[in-house]
Length: 186
Length: 186
DNA sequence: AACCGAATTTGACTTAAGTCAAAAAAACAT
DNA sequence: ATGTTTTTTTGACTTAAGTCAAATTCGGTT
Image 1: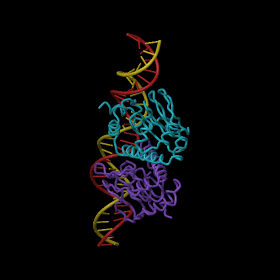
Image 2: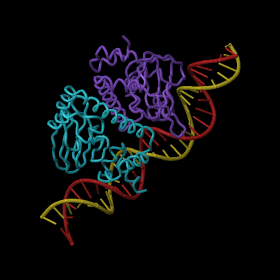
Image 3: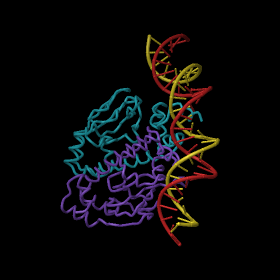
Image 4: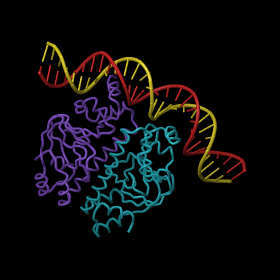
C-alpha cells in the first residue's frame, strides 16, 4: 500500500473498490530542483502527496514572487493540497529539491467524488483540515510581528524549515529578506 | 422552504429525505445587539446562516479583542461557517445588531454526515469554498498595505462594511483604529 | 435641548520594518 | 584550487504604522 492511501485512510473508511479506484488513478513523478509541477494559468490541478522532497507554491505580484506555502514529507499546508475548483491556477508550484510525489489529477478526483460517495467524506475532512491551517496562518499574519511569525513557523516544523532558503522563508512570512536576516542574527 | 436549505442546495442535490432531516434539525433564534451566540471555550459549535443582522467572531489576545470575521446576509466568510471539529472554540461569536439566524448544532450536523452520505458532498464544497476565502484573506494580509487591505475589504461588500464600526474593522484588518481613521480621511 | 458615554479624529512622537547599495559568505562549476 | 554566480549579511537612511493623550463628534436618553 502506498503513502497516499495511508494518508487518506486517516480521514475515514475506504472500501476495497474505492481503494482499487484510487490506486488506478494514482500517478508518481520524480522531478529535479527548479522544475515546475504547475504554472500560473494552467488548469491542471490535482490532489497530491509528497513522498520525498520539498516544493513551494508562489504567486507573482508586481514582479515579485510571493510564496504561499511549502510542502514536504511531514504534513504542512500543501503537502497534500486539493485544488478545489477547475479554474486556471493563480499559483505556481515548483520543486526546491529533487522530489517524488504521487498525485491524482483534478478530473480523476472529480470522478472519484462522483462515483464513490464515501470519497466525499474524505474530501470534506481534508478541506476542513486545510481550513484550520489557513485560519491559523491568517491569524498569525494578522496579529504577530515579523519576529513572532518566524518563531511560529520555526516551531511548526524545524527540520524542514532549515532546508528552505532565507529568501523563500521571508517571502512566505511577508517580510523583506534583510529583515529576516536581522531577526536570525539574534 | 427556508433560506438555509436554499443555500445548501447551491452546493449539490438534496434528496427529499435529507431535506426533511435538515428541516427537523434546523433551529431559529433572534438575539439582541451585544448578546453572545458562542463564548470562547464552549464546545457548542454549529453550522449557521444569518437571515437578517450582523455578527462578528473575535479572539482575545493579550487582553485585546481581535476580530476574525464578520457575518451578514450576503455571503461573506462566516455568514455560513461550519465549525469543523468538536473542540472547545477559541473564538467568541457576538451579535452586532439584532440578528435572526438559523442553525444546526454540531452534533446534529455530524448525525447528518453519518446518516446521509450525500450530505458530505455539500460539506466538502462548503469547506472548499471557505478554504478559498481564507486563502484570499491570508494573501491580503501577507502582501497588502493597511490601506490596500481596507480597500479590498470595502470592495468585497460595501453596504455591509458601512454597518460595522471603525474600531471593529481596524481589528479585523490587523491595524490600529487611529490608522484606519487616517486612511478614511483620505 | 442638554447631557452622558462611546466612538472617532487629531497631534506629537516612537518604533518596526522597508529600501537601496555594497560587502561578505556560500554554493557551484571549470 | 580558482573564479563565477547566488545567497546572505551589514550599513545608512526612509517610511508605514503604532502608541499615548487629548479633543471632538456622534448617538441615544431623559
